Length: 215
Image (cartoon, rainbow, N blue to C red; front, side, top):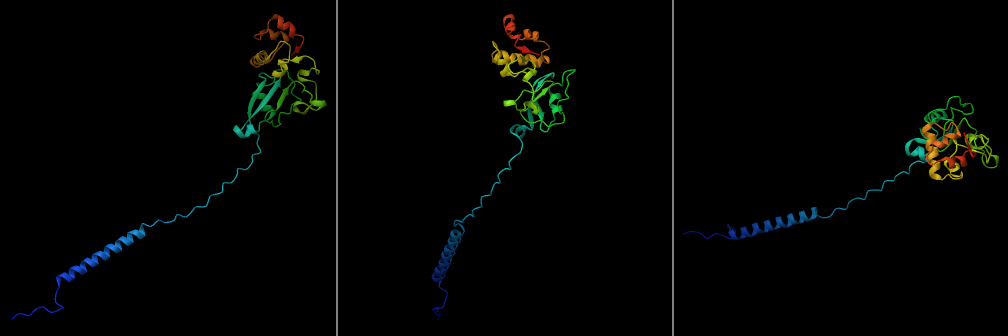
């Protein structure tokens, strides 16, 4: 006669319930772990770096921009006008950039070793114009007006500025620029009669100007 299983015997239904409970617990734990790892993490704020202001430069605007100086060279040089020289150049360098002094010109009044500054005027072979109320003129020396003439006297064609030529009767800014261009291309005027070679100066205008200009 066989015996019936006791209360502690194997129960398939109870083991299935336990297995399901274990699986459910694993799912819950897995979901909790995923949720914990997916939580937002605060990003630390990086401090704003301080940008130091650039140190002020002692160079002038033109020198700071491209390392060159613009100098006006007038008087008895081969190519009077504006020249560009490297920063730190001397008077001798500026005169050389203008083609050099004309033969026989006395350059003893110049200091060829002096450093030039941006925007200055260098006169070669002529006296500097006076400043206001008798103050020294260009290159720091007092003297007669541009071209060696007294104030109100003839205008020197080889040293006159555009404004001085424009102020002559019958000469506007266009013709004044033509005179400057002719002077630069031919190394200056050798006589007042050379004005006839400038485009726009005919016989009538030459007769009007010949006593107002000099070389």
